[in-house]
Image (cartoon, rainbow, N blue to C red; front, side, top):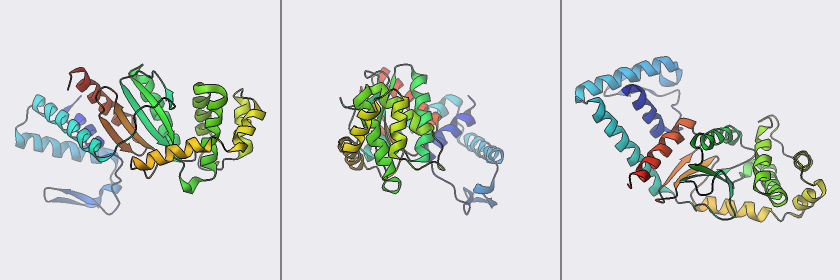
Length: 276
């Protein structure tokens, strides 16, 4: 990978989901542009960054290997700062887990079935788990936001009923199907819709309805919310990349792109393998 390309990817990791507002202008060591970044094309922004990075590299006299070393140090420093900010419970016996429970890395997600960003992120995490072929598992925990209730909490309770009736596989299939519906136009989640979905997945309609009507699974949903609040979560999706061998935790807020997760996971795997 080209040096500037790699540095740009690392910059995106640290910048994360920050939105550069329309009122911001490019400011770099006293330089500015009258055109706000928000109005620049992606190609123009890439060209500008490449030029600035190359200029700084030349001024600093850095070789390619020195740059790579600094990038790796920067990623590890980012991980350390993030770890110090928030704490989350590691994999629990009653967690819903997709993938090998003994995987080196666990991606813990707090999510909301009525959240459009969670819908997009759901597909991203599926891709991450598939990519690492047993080295990464995925824990799903509920965090229905008040602005999406009562539908979001009811859907979470329904997913718990699916797990109660059909086990872990039913939970994940039920969750996938909820996120596959159209959003935000079809944001409303109804009891009848959840019951119909359960029946389509082969779960006993009467038993599922009784479970949902009883409200008994809402306790598990609310327990997740309390744990999430204690971990500092205020919005969804909120994720933690957890290294089960070292306890290192990297919290990431928002529907982060696939590449950000793979870079962090690769660093954690490399550090664990080296005994760091």
